[in-house]
Each structure stands twice: as structure tokens, then as C-alpha cells.
Length: 613
Ligand code: M6R
Image 1 (cartoon, helix red, strand yellow):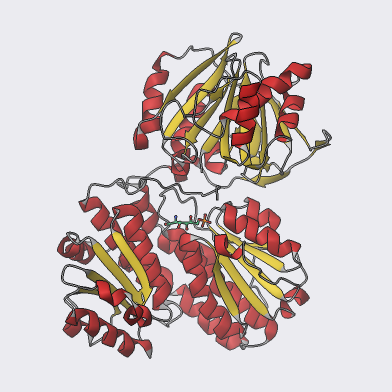
Image 2 (cartoon, rainbow, N blue to C red):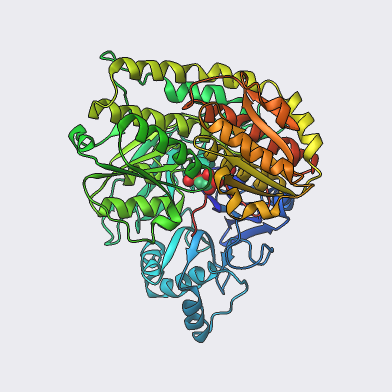
């Protein structure tokens, strides 16, 4: 959460920072701010106007000096301190010589603040971040060296941070550092850049370097020097940026969510592309371990958060069915703090669009430390998780900007199913012909998804019929259950309506008490043995007055007689059906949110990448 960007040595530095902030809004939009060197002083502006903070910041920068070449910018997702201008970054030291931006949480901020106040520092904000700038102010008194002072400042901190500093007294220099939270740097045409993630620097550099924990970066025009905790110079890993800056534009769509829903066929096709080699074997991506390790696996644990966790639940069915391996799926923030047993025979799969979500990142680090083989499934090449894992598999969905995940979830399901097939292949639990048949079936999905995303009329009618309700239950069984969870999450996050995803069989164990006229039940009925049971559960909620929407396959003959509204998807094999069933639920959430006048790309209180616990 929070987006950061910095530029050293460019005549258009302010424009670059503001443009970067526009692209980083998805990391938080509670406030935005910039600080630049200005002839021996700092020039700084901040704005806190909710979802239009960056826009308001751009307006306040209208009077900027034309000569700014070195500066930093920040979009905030508030943790400590209200989303007000006073709490907006950059934060300044007492002498207003230093400007500092931060992504993360300083856990020992209260004790540091007390100690700094005792030394005479005056605090202006209610943030955890501000302690850093005052610590740095003190550390600079030792020798005036900004890099060394930053390194000493890190020694006082507990928590997670990517931090960048601009100083009025250190012309043509920015200094940055990180622990847990991500930080990348890059250089082009004599200009040096830093950012929280690739969108910050898209269109400016074609290669970025990922900074390791507790390393400090010294950025100057035409030079970037990275040093480790001991002050030795190190060479960071680099990653090529293949995305162009156009991928961060809406491309004629009303919003990013619509664009990304329409990009789903391509996201699935790209994730499936070239996965079978000349010998008929499944190809994963960067797997830095012996295949023998995978053959020895006797248990799989999938960890993720939010939509990525839901994709993991679909993946569980595939791994258990095709590879015959017991598979657990856990919410990463819970998994981290239980006494899970690791070891070389457990494969841990971290699923994350961003590859940066703190809980998933820390969960896989823990698993690796415990001796397990770890694979990260991510949409971002070179993201922290892919560097921490033994192997990475990419979803190739392209940049996803809208806070609500759409195309990346579908691509994650595909990636997990491919991984399940690879495990089946290695363990000999499925024949080459069976695997080929399954992959063929998966290849039919882009065309079916294209058909669904192109047809929104029926979904809009259904949305119009149910959007006055306040309470929604999403029910499913078996492979329909993760779809129900994902449908409920989409609706609540972008429409602000109460929506609960539930396994339909659990309904009678409590939640049915809430069913009454006015409540909407959205049921996901996939063909197979669970369909009849779903229809019994639908009868139970109808008998209690609920309005029922059913997502059903084309051949379902029963649905029209039991549902108030039906959303059809094509008939496909059961393992492929969740991918299709998620699409009308994304569209339904979108239509309801739009009818409520909500900015779907920037729903309140949310950020796309969650880098704080
Ligand atoms: O980047 P990640 O996939 O790790 O993010 C995890 C969740 O924050 C994310 O899936 C979130 O639930 C969705 N954006 C909701 O649509």
C-alpha cells in the first residue's frame, strides 16, 4: 500500500513524479504529496481529497518553479493517522531541510516518538512515518553523510518500510532503503528513478533493479549505488519491463475494471500459451530446483489473501484430483501465525497477483526457512515473492490497475491447474493423453469468456432487479464454493453492500436465520452431483422469502423453475466452470456498484497491494 516514486536529474522531474503518482493511485488515494530540491531549499506540496487527491495535488503544483530536477512523490493509504493533509507525505524534519516518504508501518513508532520528543523534536502529524525524518535529522548531525545516516536510521526501526528521502543540503541526490516493503530503481538517459513498483517507472526505464532488505540506495544523475547493511557495494538483480505505458491507460473503456474484464480472454490465453513443450510435457516458468524435489512431495499447502485465496481454493480441487496430493488452502495471515509443520516433503504455493502482499510473502519465507519447496504464482515478474521462492510461475495477465481483481484471478486458476497437471505428470498420476485432453479443454476457455464479457445486457437487467437489497448471500458447493466467495467479495468491495459467501451446506448451521424477504441469494450451480443439493438449498431460501439469482450452465433444465433470475454460462468440464462462473458475478458487482454511483476502480478504504499487516 502507498505508492512511492523519486526522480533525480530530469528537467521534467515534477511531471514524471505526478504522472507516476497517477499510475500509483491504485496503491492508495487517501492523500498525495511531493517534495523537491529548490535552490538550496525544499519545495513541497500535499493534498488530501480522498479519491481525487492526486488530481488536487496536480492543481496545487500549478505554481511550481520550472527548475525542479530532484524530488519524490507519494500516494497514501492511511494506517496511522487520519487521511488528512497534515498526515500526508512527504514529512519534513524540524528544520524543514529533509522530506521523507514511506510505504509500510514502523511498529516501534510510539517509543521512538517519545524518545525524539524528549530530545526536543516537534511532531506535526499523527503518523508512524514522521519518526523516521526526525531520526534522520539527528543521525545527520554525526557526519552529514545522507547514505550513512539513513543506514544508521534503519537500525532504530522495527516494522516494514520502503523509504525515500530528499534533502535540501544534498543537491542532486536521493537516498532510499527498504525492509519487507518493495523498492525498485532504474536509470535511463542519465536520469535515476526509484519506485514502489513497476507502474511508477513504466515508460521511463526498460529495466529495473529490485533492492534487497536493509540495503540503501544512493541515486544521483547517471548513477545508482546500492550498499548492504555493512556499507559494502552490492549489485541488485534486474528485471526487464515488458509492459508499455499504454497498459496503464484505460484504452477507451469507461474504467479499468471494464477494461480488465474485457482483457480476460487474452489473460487466460497468455497464461496457457506455450505450456506444452515438444515432448508433450507441461512447462512452468523459472523453477530453480530439481524436479526430483517435486516427486518427493506428499502434501501441498496453498496460501494467499482475498481473491488469490479464492483461486487457491479452486486449485486445491485440481491438485487433489489430478496429482492425488492432500492439499490445504490457508489465508496467509492465519497460516503465518499457526504452528504449521514444514519440511522438504511439503510444497508451499504462494498465490499473489502483486507478489508483494505482506502476509503471503512472509508465509512463504517462513515455509522456505522450514525446508519446504516454495513456488510463487504471481503476475509481476521479479516481484518479492518470486525472488523469495524456489520457483515462480507467472499469470501473464498484464498490468491490473483496478483494485478489484478480475483477469488476474481467472489467470491464477489457470496457473494452478497447470501446476496441478505438472505434479500429476511428475508423479505419473495422469497419462499424457489425459493431460493433453485437460489442456485442450482449458484452451477452449478464452473463446467462452469472450462470449460472456461481450454480453452484459442480461446482467444489467438482473442488477436492476436486485440492487435495492442491502443483504446478499452467495452460495456454492464444491467448485462453486470458491466462485461464491469471489462473487461476494467483488460485490462488497465495490458496491459497499453486505455480501457473504457461504458453502451452501453450511446454511442450515446458522446463516439461514438471516434469510427473509428482501434478502438476495446468489447461487452458483455447476453441473454434476452437487447440482441437486444446490437446488434443495435454493428451495430452502425461497421458502423463506429470498430473491434468488442462479448462475447456471446452458444445459441446466431445472433452473428456470426455481430462480427469480438466471445468469447462464456455457457448458464446460467441471474444472473449467469456475473460470466462467466468476465472469457474470464480476459483471453483476460492477453493474450494482455503477447503479450506486461508486468509483469502481477506487473503492473506499482499499488499496490494490496490501503491504501492511
Ligand atoms: O496481490 P495479491 O493477489 O496478493 O492481493 C491479495 C488481495 O489483496 C486481493 O486479491 C484482493 O482481495 C482483491 N484485489 C479483491 O478484488
